[in-house]
Image (cartoon, rainbow, N blue to C red; front, side):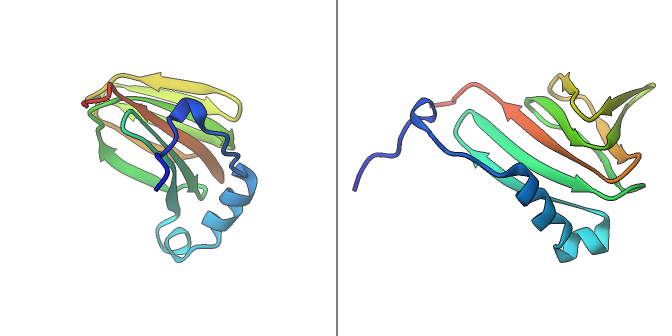
Amino acid sequence: MQPRPNASDRRDTIDLGGSDLKLRGEEAYARDGHTARTLLRESDLRIVLIAMRKGASISEHHTDHTAAIQVLTGHVRVRFAGSVSDVHAGHLFVFEAGAPHEVEADVDSSFLLTLGWRDKA
């Protein structure tokens, strides 16, 4: 068995547009207005593609890791206690670990959620 390559040795290419279209065709998207697919899962990094229909929301939650939302298409609002951040296509929004937040799509939207943390190994 060959050893798994380090992230720095990766040469993967992911078709984000094609992946977005596939997500929008899934039952969960039709039912809930949003769905997600993990594109990369490493010990220190996770990248998730999320597609949301206009008006859909992801209820309040938090992450224990530093996070970034990179909007690919559309416009989402990230709500924190007492504040709202509008994130449009082509923009990157970074927020700290532990901050309770919710996400709402102003229009049909897709974004990459990137979570990073120190390797615990």
